[in-house]
Image 1 (cartoon, helix red, strand yellow):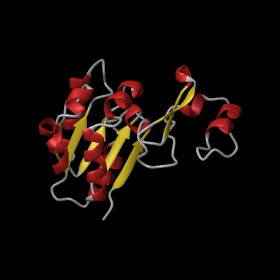
Image 2 (cartoon, rainbow, N blue to C red):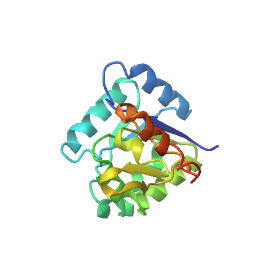
Image 3 (cartoon, rainbow, N blue to C red):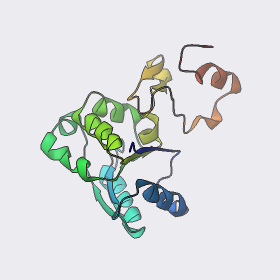
Image 4 (cartoon, rainbow, N blue to C red):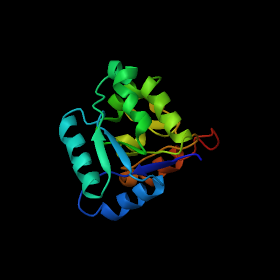
Length: 180
């Protein structure tokens, strides 16, 4: 059975997220739920982001651990990332979408994520962790839209887009080439 995808807006692992995160854990169908927190995007505090996620999901009853993939060499180290094959929920924290995308794109870890989905795991992310999952990511500093990971296809995630002018939203919501 194919797994699920979780795309959250931000403010992960905080008070008030328990109901949502329990539902995400339930969606895995696993017992026990094995959560893997990957803080790649949290460039200014990856250990804190990982610890917060592990503590949060452990309090909810999961067997939670971290995978400290901080750069491309780690994302391509088969021995280092093999723990991803055992997770029922793989969760990417917020932070820098540019760093996360550069680290994951074309990596062995990305292959493991796709395999995890095929075997029924849930893959998710919050803020930057959600942004890179779609087919394209909006990066005005790079000229607009940039190709992303494509999990899922035909989707762009704009978790902080609520401040955009309406006309900008109208121009940026279609990814199939129509209406742009």
